[in-house]
Image (cartoon, rainbow, N blue to C red; front, side):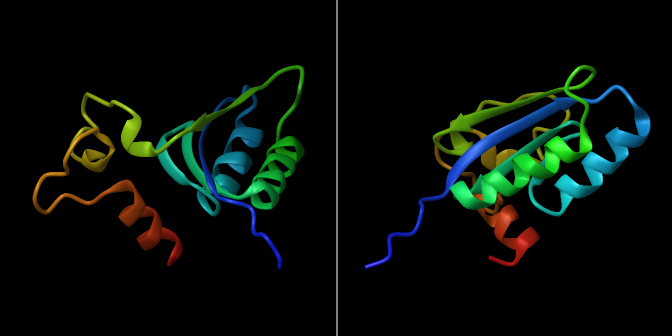
Length: 114
């Protein structure tokens, strides 16, 4: 029996100093993760996919100038958010979703067709 690796949630954040590297990284990540803010992405990946994303990030960043961090999450609804993005990310708030609100998982399925 083949055991598939379980998918895990991650918050990937970065600070890239050079504008060209920044654009290249942002463009590539938009294809593989859900953008939350300009330099913050939500990733839902198994270990193989996460490894490929990390390699892609390494190829587009400079270790001495740029800062990239990856934080594991239990689930995106465990995060608290406030501010001007509150409506756009209403599914991220803990607790029961309001009627008609779109959850993070729904947004990811719509974005990636899964």
